[in-house]
Length: 207
Length: 207
Image (cartoon, rainbow over the protein chains, first blue to last red):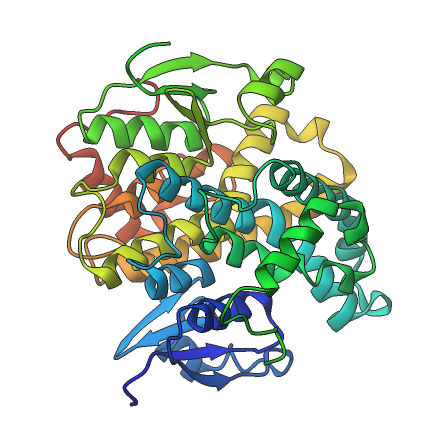
């Protein structure tokens, strides 16, 4: 076991990228262990017993402790740094956007990206096919809500870049991968994406 | 405007109850404003412009600031108290369960409760009807994951009751309302429910 936190991940997942981006912005070193989710490598008895009983990545390993849930792993890395606002309301407001990300954004924007790009429409189950229109509508509503906020504020929570921006950037900047969203419809989101990509320490998803 | 935080809510919602329960456990006074979601009272132009552009309750109002997302509102109330672990890993682990709640538990256990008890099977859309089996399976998996953890630990995160327990208690203790889950299948969850209900300051959902 190394001295650095170990990220158990699938690199193309935005949920994993969030954690790498948080670490990069903080100049924090992490090690990486790759699993192929398409081959079921996070559902093996060993993974379920020793890494995450929920069978999902990412998981951040800190010594002999395991932390699932991408936004919780980002919080562990950033706790006490400038990426978590010091002000009580702003800190809760950062979490507000992170819960919004997991409830309103990820199940729509990220799930459609995964379905369209990894599974492929030709292989959809009937249930997946039936869910696409509702997920497209809900994903567009999530992007519009962000756009309305970002038209009036440079960052999602507080006065500066925070984990709220990192968490929502991960799947927003690749929203077009599904072919079902156009970022040109959300100009304030596009400007915010450019601001994040200009931050010192920023790394792209493929890094 | 009063001196206390104002909870904009629909009392039968577990997401709203979480916030009332957090306030009660902390002996914190909050005021309550009720909206009838079945009559669309959280989708009016006034609500969307002044309370939450996302059209959802709960929202915790603190002075002239508005905080949507139930778990973020709980965090604001409990930040700096014994309901948020002081240890860095345990604090992140608490958030891990709260993100799990919003991603794996609420969209299944709470949504099925709402569909079965408020909307009624006879009124389901085809899409809702098609989603029930997957939501029942995913909800049972979430309850099983909690049960396995609680068979080995008294609380979800750290050594004591935390917001993780409050957040997951809200819809777990009424999971049977949908008619699709039986708490007897999760004995460690049942004992944890009893521990929470014995905590000083505990209030039931109907209070």
